Image (tube, rainbow, N blue to C red; front, side, top):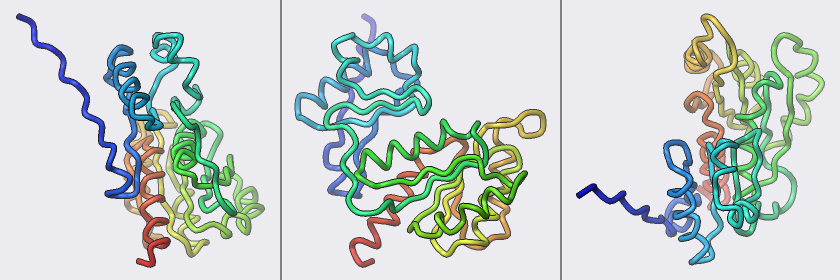
Length: 225
């Protein structure tokens, strides 16, 4: 007999345990599997954040379910349930992109933070090819407690910001670029080799991971750690 697919097991205690809600990583899952997972979330009234949900896969979800998901094609994210939690106070995180081609990754980070109730300031297209654009916004960037930087090609922007702001800087190398950019590998190596001390680096295109790193930093500060 054919093997039955394994049932997903929700981690509903994750927020209490580590301060982060569980996310549904949709890459590699069929629309039927995603729908089954979301039905479990709805059964216990648990909002769900979906990442890497491609438009074609979203379109193949049951129509009644799709209508209940706040979906954004650019970031390939969806939110089921209460929607992004209302942020309190001023934005705590600046999400900065080197170019507009990095916006999809940056929006994944911003949407994940919004889901957790963290206000975000999004600042786009301030890469090193025109440093005047960055310097025009630097005072606004410095007002935040964490900065997430999405940059491809040579990923120089995280290093530049690492030398200009005092708060934690989280670099997200993106797969933007061609030739020796090698799908983001060059950007990743450049961020890891940064001479700006203390720059934190997540995996290629991992906007969600950058958001989670920012949340851990903010949660530590909130708890007095």
